[in-house]
Length: 294
Image 1: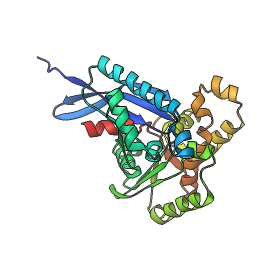
Image 2: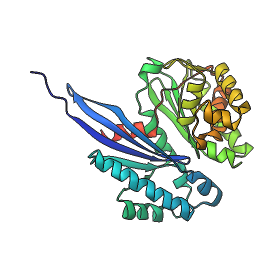
Image 3: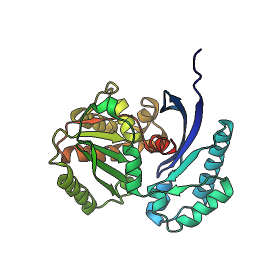
Image 4: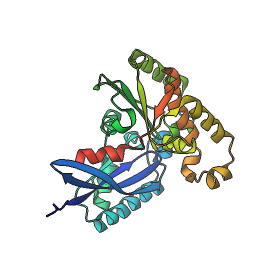
């Protein structure tokens, strides 16, 4: 008689600076080992970073949209009979003056408890994703996760956690001209100090924008994106008209203006460390949060 595999659904919500995502995942147990797979993903464009990074608060219009989004996510979770979930907010919420007040109002009006996590915690969660199928048995590797408001870098040395840092550099900050030269210089110096000496260092790029750049470059999945191809793709995107980006590349409207600035952050790291390849496993914060539920 064949054993029955019991599948449980869980939900993870990532409230970012450029969008909000709900990931429904399947969790199941096979011979004592727990696995998880993606079930469905929902993404809502809501650029909280525009409010947060410019004014330090969320407009009433966007707060209403945020509450409506969470209420709609709650309905999806109810339909999927989900009892276990996590909801984390990142850079945009960290930057808001009255963040605690907003978190309380979100729980009261939507029933969803949101936790604002630090840049360090965010990077740790992302780096807990399994990327062995991409980088093999490499012992020195570095995660770079570029969001709308911040860039998280996590370095592993000899397969063990070594250093991590969150930088106030992101796609939404860049298009709003909120990143000065000293921030770039600090970012570059930190990378040189902590990563240059590591031999055979492999870079893992995380985030929606690097995923799109990877897809546009036509690199075969699991194969690394070369620095040469990366640069070529960024140049191609810079030259393309808005219409072509929408129609030919099928980019979401909210990604069109941030994809190149965000791409330049990944490229900056590669150039600073003189790295010729970047691996793109198409994982993110919401995926890493599933491991926390498990």
